[in-house]
Image (tube, rainbow, N blue to C red; front, side, top):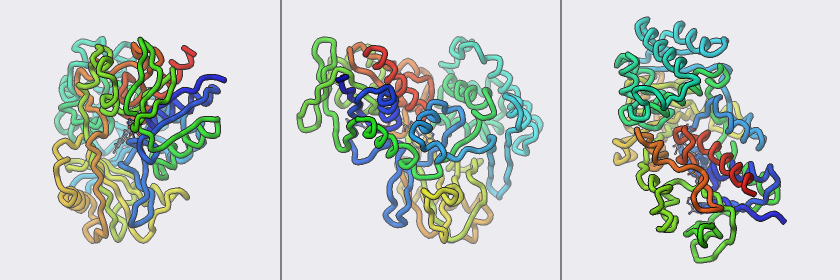
Length: 456
Ligand SMILES: Cc1cc2nc3c(=O)[nH]c(=O)nc-3n(C[C@H](O)[C@H](O)[C@H](O)COP(=O)(O)OP(=O)(O)OC[C@H]3O[C@@H](n4cnc5c(N)ncnc54)[C@H](O)[C@@H]3O)c2cc1C
């Protein structure tokens, strides 16, 4: 019988690796330390309403090709509600609404025509946005990293300045996209990864630019289905199993030590735990190896989310970019969930979630303070909210949401194949070239599965 492959970590990366191996007919054992699947992209049952709430709002893009394939394999793709074409609404204090709506044209004209017709920019700003678009197009087909000056050494803010983007177009458009895609402020985030994201999302095809929102709790969108898929394909999945060490003999991985001391033998092991988790149990001799040397230098970037239940609707839009406020995006959970049988929302209350990415400066604030800012900003931006009564709020802090993608970060991210035989790395933080995203995690999982299969 073929040897069992051990996967550590039950987030997107570990589950995708497991599903890819199971599809290839391999036996998988997946260990997850917590009592739930999904890692940093999961839902939980809200004690008050009974609703499935996510640990933070997640959005997908049409260019998440690996993720779409993964969800299709699981049969859950229809739980992500994709826009027919990319449409972005923006609101600002006082209630001014503007929109960028891509057109039904081949890329990049779908975007260019949408920007030209948009009321979100002045004519001067439209020219600036198109200038950046043309610059990205010129780079297409060439290595972004080979450019002069090298994007890997610049922040997004420096890059935008080089491309003649005014403060206003930065603040009202690019900064909102950067913080959403990178979970980091444009003054901190690296230009090379952002340019790659823009190229993939905006300049390949109209379908790639679409935004997809889970119409059910995240766990219902993939995590439970992936665990069931593994079991149905002869695999073993175990919650509450924490790995405490790696067993190494010579230059070969031979198993893991579980918390409690038990040894699980395996000669093919995929670690799909976050970088800060790996550092806890990687043997010191390996941690000192230059291959693993960058991991300890990765820094986290936090996300704060606030759920607010109002006694009446405050917007008819699905989601909105907020201009000039602390919170950057607002999602209309009632509208999103109402269209799904799995998302059951309370029709008497109106639920929105607000997202504050790259939240370094806000992590220390109390939950009451953060909820207060969220509610005040909702009132300033949405005129309908002024008459609404806040029934309840829930603040979620994810201090270790993603790694911080600062310039130079690519050199710190290790590849999938390690110098230790039989030991592979996956996770959104590994060298995918993408920011810490669902797509990066899934891609890393598939890459690790491919590496194992090639050496089998
Ligand atoms: C609030 C928030 C909002 C986000 N929004 C978006 C978004 O809109 N779009 C997007 O694409 N991405 C978004 N992301 C990022 C996305 O969630 C992550 O990139 C992705 O979930 C990472 O998956 P992963 O499998 O690499 O890691 P994880 O999800 O962290 O999975 C790793 C798993 O390993 C387990 N583990 C750790 N140590 C051990 C151990 N010793 N033994 C066994 N198991 C262990 C953990 O418990 C965890 O379940 C967001 C993240 C957060 C937190």
